[in-house]
Picture (cartoon, chains in turn cyan, green):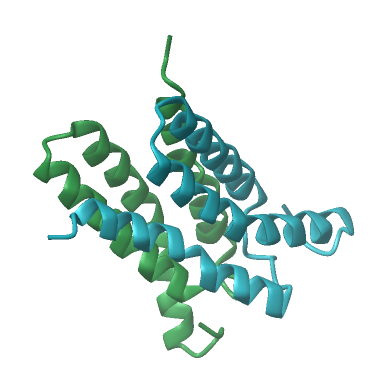
Amino acid sequence: MVSIGLIAAFFTTVSFIPQALKTLKTRDTSGISLPMYIMFFLGVSLWIVYGLEINDSSIVIGNSCVLMFIVPILYIKIKAVSAEKVPT
Amino acid sequence: MVSIGLIAAFFTTVSFIPQALKTLKTRDTSGISLPMYIMFFLGVSLWIVYGLEINDSSIVIGNSCVLMFIVPILYIKIKAVSAEKVPT
């Protein structure tokens, strides 16, 4: 039986895909919190370091996927904030 | 030494606080993806079930905090979408 943990990890990981696609399509980041994505980026990066430290490939792979999805969101948000188009 | 995993969990958990505060304050959810928060809500709920199943209180507590932070975001987004003010 596939563990509930794996299904949970699947949903929390792929959940960032629709947000990344929406942000790439609409460039609308006014409602998105920059501090959230900076902290989340930091947290996910630390999960990857932790996964490498304890040699757990599922933690490394899962969080690397999340990192891949949130980088475009963070990039577009930072660009919009630095162009003073939207608040942080 | 505090484990990197604990620090990672801290950042990925508290990162939703600024988003919740911003959404509660601005009610601006046009750039926020409804499918993301539905999937994330499902994933976090499954993490809590998993934590209960393996008797790991840190997984249960951490994800319960995240659930607490994302519920207002999800609620405000669903209200805005159902009032046809914003796209999903």
